Image (cartoon, rainbow, N blue to C red; front, top):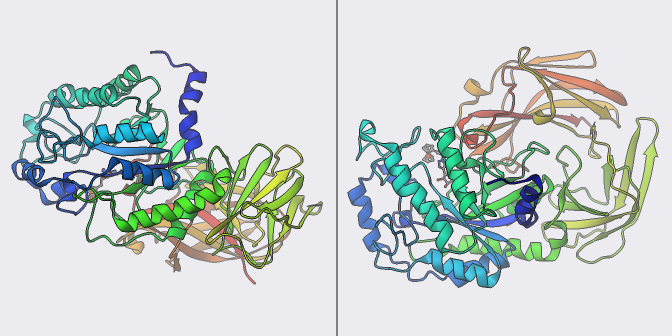
Length: 559
Ligand code: H79
């Protein structure tokens, strides 16, 4: 089938406008309640795992309530695990008896019930399908994660799995449940280019409008949009393709009774805003119980987010990303034609006055979406230092609870200074993805503009995986050169942030002080030399493979 460029755009439009979806990890693994990798972790024999099906009777499941919750939360699509790595089909499959209708006392097809509710309530139904890993089937083969306790790798004949299970089940999902928004494939390690392409084509041939995520393959460029790594939030303009962050509310995907480490509502809202301001979608996960209930802690959070979106929907749906290439300390930006939205994170927002550098076009009006009361603004161009400045007086109390959204109405076409420019707080943030990289020299360089001169602490920003020894993976020599000043240091874990705009479990943001430099008002080039300097990886599914990731350099003014 030939897909032209304009088709391509319109096929994706609903999804790009949607911004927010619900991920549901639901399966037999809700019974042991240790997450969806329980079978693999315990090396549970297939015969024993199959016994779980006999106890699986989620009588409290209500498609109507789940879809209603997604809608109330402001989500526009829903992705449910039709089959996860354990091989259990949560729909009535005709090609494999190991499914919820034929193998459980429940005997209902929740996918069918969800399909009907989604149609009724106007939300797009989508499927997660584990197309490569299947620990139940004797012939599935993944690069690493196979059931080798029941089956011998050398006895496996991959195409028996591929032709008898994977493709037929995908066909069932796309022919029996009405129009499907997208197919969410996962962990394609070892799948050939030809087989990956075959799966993409199978989906598009059955439902041309159905989107496919990039995790259908480890071969680059496949699928309609980019799935980021689990819980990965990219930097600004890191992606050229439309993208989505799959994200957990605690640390687990499938129901995990012991995992009560829930993200705070405010940090989920910060992350939603951060993602949307970078042009991405947030696919936020819940793991329902074996009774068929979405955990109360999850429901509570979704309702709270829904409340916020409801008040601020104008600044979320159908918006374009921020035109600035860096994260702001105080929050994030989204835009629509003629309007710029400033999402103020109360926790990090300055009092009295917000200053935005780099907006070149004229602002006609500023007000909070919550109340519409006009705010006093002052715009100027500072010839010395060549920068534009917008000052907005803030009321003593911000109108929302965690994030208040301000609209700027523009008099002219949106135009910004896209260079790295000092922020009003005095900070300059240089993301690695926007550096010029010279791999031979192990060097990253950036140009940036100083508006308020002074002394700066040079801070290295890394994401460190939980449990990793810093000395081994982070503590290597770094050299910084800027304006004739040179720092040579072995960075330490000076600050481990509690909360970070784009870093989350299983990573923590580590800030290391590299030393101080002095800069006057001018444009400078900074270079960083370190063997941690890398080109950005081709695909991001294995986001969690690296122990320490270099993300940015920050220059923070010393007062
Ligand atoms: O469906 C969720 C995960 O089950 C799935 N992707 C999200 C959306 C996923 N499949 N594979 N992986 C994630 C990466 C594999 C990570 C592993 Fe592990 C590290 C497997 C074994 C070691 C995670 C940590 C599972 C057990 C320990």
